[in-house]
Structures are given as structure tokens and as C-alpha cells.
Length: 119
Image (tube, rainbow, N blue to C red; front, side, top):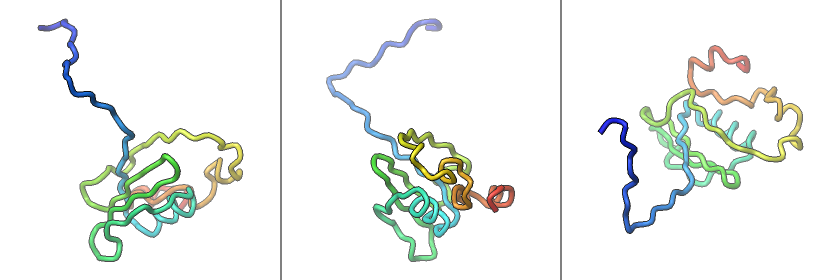
């Protein structure tokens, strides 16, 4: 009925939500690793297959932050925004905090590469 509030479905099963892990599209594995590992300080937890000529899928993490990086055509969307809450950014180097170093922006797409101020 229009205007009627929805009632929650009552179940005997208790569901608890865990953290979400976004999958971000990458186009260049080398640049992605330089950004996420060298610049942000993440570690590569596992790498699905970066030695073949096919698409790659890997997981990087730093503390509670976990991200999946994929070069598969249908994974992620170039330009996706992920909010990562941080503490202690005042202790970062000034260039890191301002994002003024060359490695502070990964090449997410050929179009961004062409228009990036960091190119």
C-alpha cells in the first residue's frame, strides 16, 4: 500500500555485517604497486596472477584498511571514490599530507593519465 511504512523481516537468524572490501580498477600494475605499497605503505597480502599476460587481481592492506585491486575489465569503475578515515595525518611529511608528490595519484585510466596534473 502506498504510504505504508515497511516492517522489518523478523527472523531467528542473527546477521552481523562485517567490513566492506572495495575492488578498485587498475590499468598499470607497476604504478598501482608504487602508489599503494611504496607511497601509502600497504603490503600485498596475495596476488592472484601478476606473472601471466592476463588480468591481475590482488589484495593490499595497511592495518584495518583492505583493498582489492583488479585489472579485470568488469571489476571496479575508473574514478570510484572510497572514503578512508585516518588519524595522525599531522605527523605525515608535508608533501604527503598535501598530496604534492608525483606518486600521490595513481594512473586510474588512460583518460585521467592524459589530464592529470601529475603527468
